[in-house]
View 1 (tube, rainbow, N blue to C red):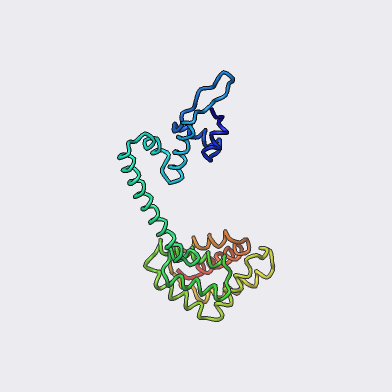
View 2 (cartoon, one colour):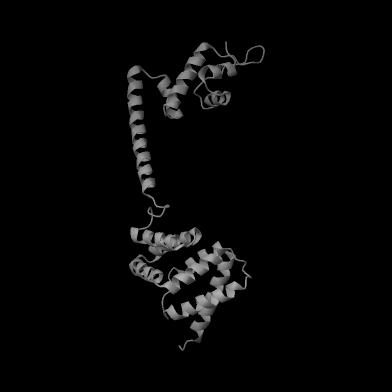
Length: 244
């Protein structure tokens, strides 16, 4: 006769596992003896080893009880079904591994190559990873909200990075990410960015995804939040001042 600890050690499992098998009905729990202990017969050890072996082989616990009492032909058929299920699962996992291997920082999964190339170009220019991730999210939003605008936006974005002055401003804004919102250097940066915006904005252009993108940038950095709010305020004043 075995104690629960001896039974667990015989089968190479923990006492907690034995109790779990009791709970789910796989292994009968013996009554307590006169001294108040539960004692297990040798058959319980055999059954526990069979349960552990099936579980280690990937057989779901819900199917083990039927297998323990199955006839040889039934057992063989059930094992063939389980093997086919495991093979299908292996194929799924292999496909997941192939997809992961194709990922470029997780971007290729959801974005086309021309946009991934823009993100790579930003990294090559020295733009920080936080700003690159925000750019990635902006493209994801754009493709969801206005997929027809993606091709033109790709051309526009590459044109921006072709311009040294625009690239300088982008890098300057990127370096400000950790500045205190009260840092006086932000005043000059805001003035420069506002002048660039005023020179490049197109009156009447739809807001599109810009509000969502601005919100994402504002969430990322208190300094950037101040810049975005200031630029939006100045842009609103310019729009209000236009005739009509």
